Image 1: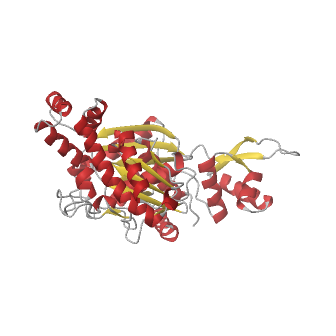
Image 2 (image 1 turned 30 degrees about the vertical axis):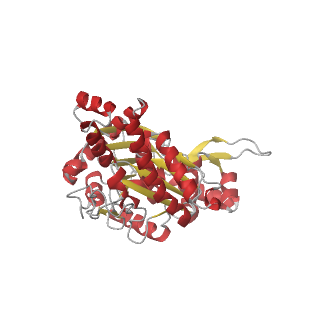
Image 3 (image 1 turned 180 degrees about the vertical axis):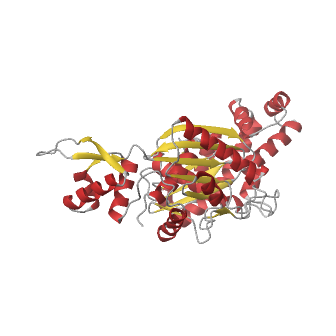
Length: 414
């Protein structure tokens, strides 16, 4: 994503150059690398930074001094002794603040982070994305202002946003998103940037969650991995050699619309037989309701009588009750997901697959089925050292990943 990402980052900074509450941005490639090392690994001494980046200690002293002048870095006390005079630890400025906004199909979450993407405060509300961009973004802005006010932040360094649909990353807008009626072509990035007065970046929610896993989750040490989100929709974030891969038009990883059967339920995209139409959150709720009304699942029928509706969480509850029909539902869905992932493993040969999203909270019964199919259908060479694991970040993957997205832009060299 290198050159394209830098181009978009340069644009958002150019459009909102005075919005950044810090004194400046990195002026050289070395300064940018220093900031990202400090973000991802915590305080490091000048000696360690020089060694890691392959520059002289004199050069590093000069670059750190400049970052301090720009308000981006600060001293953090003496480093551990390595013999001779002790070096000084360098850390990101304690004034750096980012906002991550995760807009899902049914919820909006906003988090404030420090420069190392540690969540300092977070707020969430239930919100149907089908209501359209204006009410949903108004709620996101309200949550953002509340979180900022709670922590005494006038204006953040930048805001990252994830939405549940295809995104034109360069234009900062959704493009024909199947589950987001009214959002096509809406200038989300620019609208939020105007309201908040700071740089904003927009991306697909799965890409953002992959960035969150890469920074703080089980993929922290993986260079090549797939993050699979199973929620209302199904998508896949692709990380190659440590970099998020978006594809030519930004829709790489849209695996929910891979056809798994020639004939099947109609999908939100208009086609039939898509993976998402069989096992996305809406599909799971649909099938659960049919099972409850048809008398095939006493557990689901009981939950329907109690609540008046059913969701993926109710399917999970029925599984824990030992309900055989819902167990088979999970096995069937996991089989289809595994079938698609097995093809991706043969094609991409990743080092790790992380399964996340709200439907993934069905847990180990789902994971076991996905694993079984992937391992059976892929070549032994591709799966011999391939962990397939559940995300441990929960809802934090989206907001931390969104903050990581904008921090990459703020910390990028000009």
